[in-house]
Length: 311
Image (cartoon, rainbow, N blue to C red; front, side, top):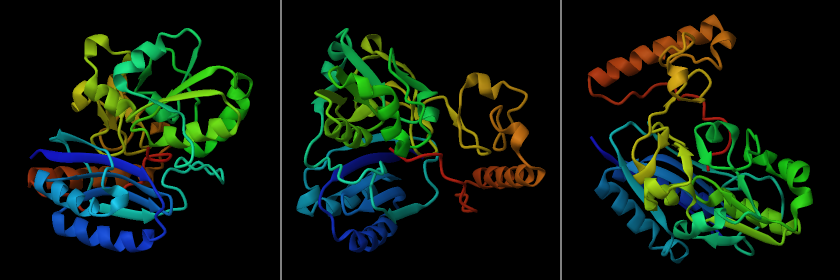
């Protein structure tokens, strides 16, 4: 059965985030919504899945609040499993940078529409930076982009200090999965004295949705933070799978390795798994397969989260 996936975020003053957690949990349960919602006093960040009608009803209620009335959202369809449950958390930041005083509602870089992105990249003076984490960059990125080699977004300030501090006078263009990380990253660069900061509006997902593959500067697939794992142009399902041993996205060469065992391990983690962990993963994989054959959802022990912050 195809499910609708919707992603959205909004930086806004949300002092009543705890009340929103209760409200959205009740609404999500009544509409059969699965996924992840992060709430904080600075706003909301979410990726959800459900039926088309369920998602429509959920968003209609959410947008009754003036703070979310005009909030952009991106939808796509998939026949893959996406989430196993609805998880709503309240955090200090809806995307965790860890630097006090960075407020995207006050100042961010200049948005660049997907239609104008290629022209910007053609500028020889542009310093192009991928703001995502290492496991995301592994699957795909824009040609010529600088990889910050971070494991979490909290490492971004150190990357800026070590690698960008001498580039404050250069034009910096950045991108991320859906746009939210660049809101914080661009605000941070401007606070650090950078003169010209640009970021891809709506992120990679917006670019892949609106750009013809023949004209695209994107190479590979785009990692997404649920069990769909990755998408390509047109937001079609990608080919990548997720290793349940270490939560790393796997490419074709990983799947062909003798160290790959479905649902258990990959070349990155195989040698480091304990016998106990390996058998636990094998048992979980057996239960998942049984549930799939019975056409039932697998509701078992929640797997460890994907490393780093969701974008």
